[in-house]
Image (cartoon, rainbow, N blue to C red):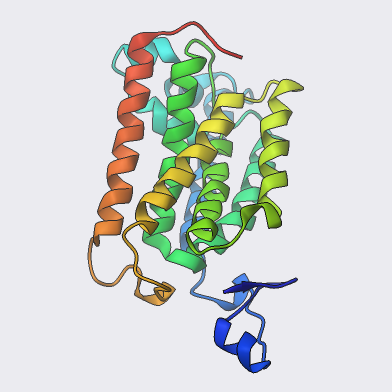
Amino acid sequence: MTSASVGFHCPECTKSGAQKVYRARDLGSKPTLVYAVIGLCVAAFVGQVLSGEGDWFRGSFYENGVLFGPLVDNGEYWRMLTSGFLHAGILHLAFNMYALYIFGPAVQRAVGWGRTALIYAGGLFGGSAAVLLFNWDSPTLGASGAVLGLAGGLAGILYARGINITQTSLGGIFLINLALPFFTNISFWGHFGGIAGGFIVAMAMSAFDGPQRSPSMQDRSGPSPAIVAGGLVVIGLIALGVLGARLALSPIL
């Protein structure tokens, strides 16, 4: 594919001069995975509000789901997952769900729902692992790491297909989201780990792909070597998070 002002041009069309622009919304099926994750996050937030009697920082949903190194070290490993569905207020939830709605469909239409799920998991567990390694004793919650994992995964997909990421808007998105934590109480490591996790999973899967696989073929032939590779990276990120909780390193940033 050749980069265009909007979408991409296929090489054959570029040579013939009959260029046709393909946009993300023109490819693939409906982003059902994105809708499912949005539904889970909204349901979890409702649970936070109800269990905390109006206070989303209280109640069983928050207390049993937030990421906190000492409790993960105590064997509560599920927090690496559940924290990615909890949020610190309506605006926090709304912003993350909007970003998910932007990035999720683009990734799913490019590589199918199975690989998108792995990339999302890579962002989620990559963010949790980075927090547990470098900010062990700070309670952390939110889907931003996983959502940025989709952006990181999209960067990996484009890079594997020979597209210069610096010529897209992704570079600016990464810079903004890595700078925001220095001016707010947003987790830097959650963002950084999410971007890195999604990128690594996407690159691991792309390493096993042949040239220009059709998105419609991605998830029909069972667990391909690419899917297995992506799954192994996700498992590795989970193990890294457990190790971070055990090490209990002094916070960095």
